Length: 134
Image (tube, rainbow, N blue to C red; front, side, top):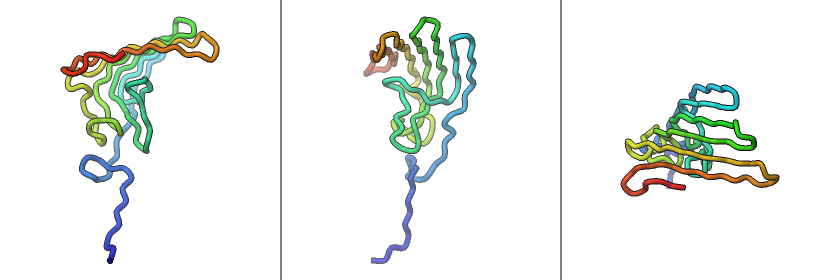
């Protein structure tokens, strides 16, 4: 058997062709113990996360607000609109999350006890099959 062509593509999109994607481009405002980040960004929460199992992580178009005014506590608020990456519906371009409803996220992380982190997360989805995840 004669091999005429060997084609190795590490990054393959929906049409089995290679692709490039602008993963992160955001505006970040820091004020006091608060941070507001708007744009394409990597997010680490239990349900919406980078999940970097390959070269292209999950990236989100979102607005994220974090506050650390309470000692040992981080409050996380997010509005996630689109995503791209290994877990996205279409991996090689940014597509809507949850149809046209987007996803809202509320998280609280407390680390005031030695060697223990307590977290609570709520995801508002408003779609026909799933209303929320906690």
